[in-house]
Image 1: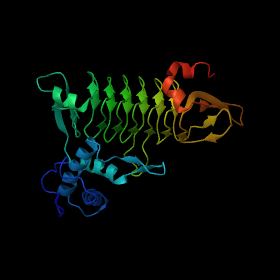
Image 2 (image 1 turned 60 degrees about the vertical axis):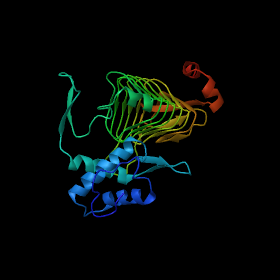
Image 3 (image 1 turned 90 degrees about the vertical axis):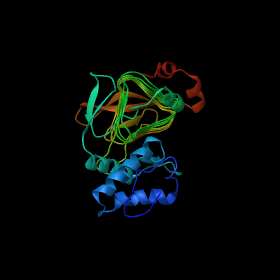
Image 4 (image 1 turned 90 degrees about the horizontal axis):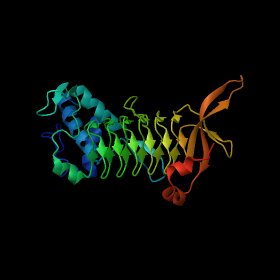
Length: 290
């Protein structure tokens, strides 16, 4: 990849962007304040291609286990919006299915061979915007996956579920029907919602505001967790915010306040080890927790 004032022709990301220097250069474009609109446009196109194939991510897990935001990736997506016009998009041969957007559909122009190579199953009604990474073995029911999201291998995104901008979904998760996983592009630097590997998110639940659901956790149907939601461990009484520990079983609850009213909270009713979680049906884990 040429390193100069301009990126030149669109980078062939499967061949050209593979060194630390290349990624540092792209990062520098979005961190700088004096880049031309043309340079931003070309660099943002390259960044979206890299996101699309999983070479870069908006948020990554560090060696210490913390989730770290790549703010320059968020800036790249915002730069794409600023430097590209709205375009009409439709399905060739169809006169009833069309969109008007700046971000193209991820699967636009894909044929059977490409789906087979990617090992992705996407049923009618599933819509994924370009730059969202979809891992091998993912099943997409009629659902929506937004820009720069990352969906790990073997995960199911069920009917009417939505995955927000930059949201991180781990491997072998089940995001049930009607679930909302929050995303974030602005303010730049804010962490998106993270669902770690092996989680089950029950139907009609909402997880937003950069909340992290730890590996192997189970959320019962209709559980809502945002950054200000109290997460109460029933066994210890500990109250936390923003993070569900790994292998937790969480249900909706309420907690009394000093004024006598009760406010919504999420309750960790028990923990399950990885071995139990892997061999036990979700319904069995949830049965009797109340």
